[in-house]
Amino acid sequence: MTRHTESTLEFSGRLRRRRDTSLIVLAVACVALVGCGAAGPPAGPPQMAPPEVQVSLPVSGEVTDYVDFPGRVEAVDTVEIRARVTGYLEKVHFKEGALVKQGDLLFEIDSRLYEAELARAEGAVLQIEGRLTRLNGDFERAQSLQAKGAISKEELSRITGDRTEAQGALKVNEAARDLAKLNLSFTQVRAPLSGRISRRSIDPGNLVKADDTSVTSIVSLDPVYAYFDLDERTMLQLKRLIREGKIDWSLDAGLSVLMGLADEQGFPRRGEINFAENRVDSDTGTWRLRGRFDNHDNALPPGLFVRIRLPFGPPHDAILVTEEALGTDQGQKYVYVIGDDGKAEYRRITVGRLHDGLRVVSNGLSAGDRVVVNGLQRVRPGIEVHAEVVPMPQVGKPAGQEIGEAK
Image (cartoon, rainbow, N blue to C red; front, side):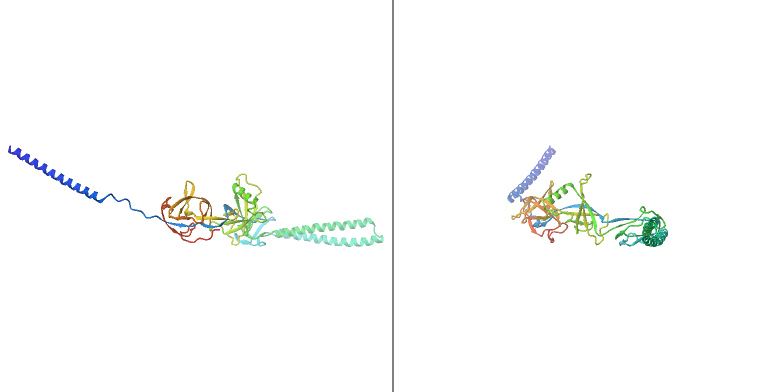
């Protein structure tokens, strides 16, 4: 009985300690809740500063539209050197790949056979000249005798005929002598034009055949031609501008065209179109033109591929911006314009060609618009921005660097 009472009292003590602990926890929670209520509602997200961007005013200038094409350089004159007489090649006087001048001796063919032919032809001329001299004397005496009636008409006719035959034979032999002299001169082959010579295709000691064996070739270097092909749409547009009088072009007046090499900036070389094909290529649908360019620095070897720029239409005023300011939305170009209230405006535009690193904007901008040129990714329509005005940058140059005039 005593043990049961002690167990009951111990159990009751544990219950009281648990109840007291629960009350303490509840009181602490209430105090915490009261404290939270006294502090007020929680604070919202901190206000962010407006994004910083750089803006520029569009560049206004006079520009001329153009179209770019690939082209290929060709020599104005190309000559394949062939022997004009048959014989064995004796000497080569040129250095392969060197510059030669018109009239320079290139190679020699064995001339002994042709010297002998010339000597024989000259002997034949000398022989017939002696016979003709004798017949001229006979003719003069026959005329004197015929006047005195001392010679018959038949004898006079015979002497006259012999003299005429000798005159004809002299001309034949003189022609043979001139031909032999010409063939002898052909044994020394000289450069027909100035330019750069290629390698030799035959070595001394080999037989060359007249008008058959090619020994080398020469190409002229200054000036040169550049051929390029216009697509059908560009050709029709060009012809329309010519008919309307907006482009003044004829084969006599010429049309200005520009050229640039792979390692050159822009198109520093200027030439004129002096040939247009008389038909459109039915296989490719293109129209071939040819420009003539000076090549004083010998930087345009035949066969070189080049960049051709054809100015298109009359000069006109245009607004230009850097390509860094342009964005693309489903194929449509746009820019962000910062208004007087400092907020960004989404503006769709129509663009044209590049001029001195700037893109022509044909619709959607005015000269006084402040266009975002740096920080475009931080701008959204309608947000307020902190704009710093800088000069309009060119492609490949940092914002703030001065640009040249648009041309």
